[in-house]
Length: 187
Image (cartoon, rainbow, N blue to C red; front, side, top):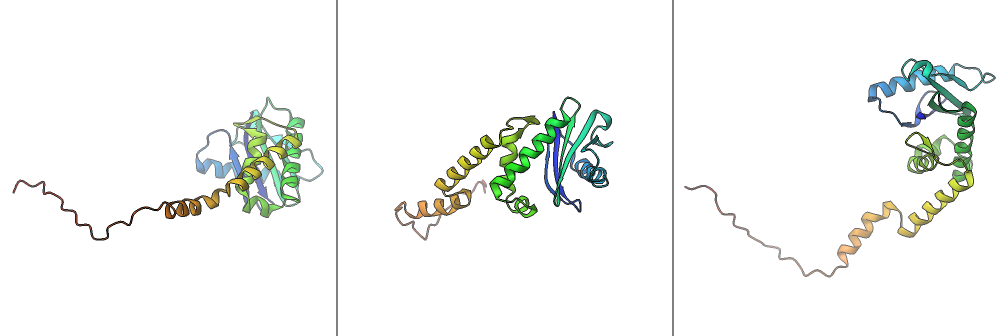
């Protein structure tokens, strides 16, 4: 089972974090720092698997990662997961991001976080792998994009609500309403 998915840049700044197991906020920050320290110190020519750090579960867990340009994609998994299967899953996730954003870069992850999370939810949910077929994932993302465009997007919802209220032809409200509140005091 996947315990966490961490994406951070070459300087250790988290760009997307998803924990599928509860950790307190301070523990999550320590896990991110320790994971970055473990992964970033490795040479590019060594294998992409290593034992989890002391905070995420030690030898019972594995860190499986890929380094693309300025980003590290790290999956923290338990011993039941296949290392090669997770490496392939990372590749599918990155290629899907690349297809959806047309040459994905770090800024896409920052400015389109909602879309990145949606894509990730198409691939993994609750720590379980849902879909590994990139064409299926891209198809679902395109369907979601079409639905958002037909609805005007979430950002247009407040404006549509205001215009709907304005167009309701409500009678004009009286301006000077004096409401006398009865006193609850017996004196």
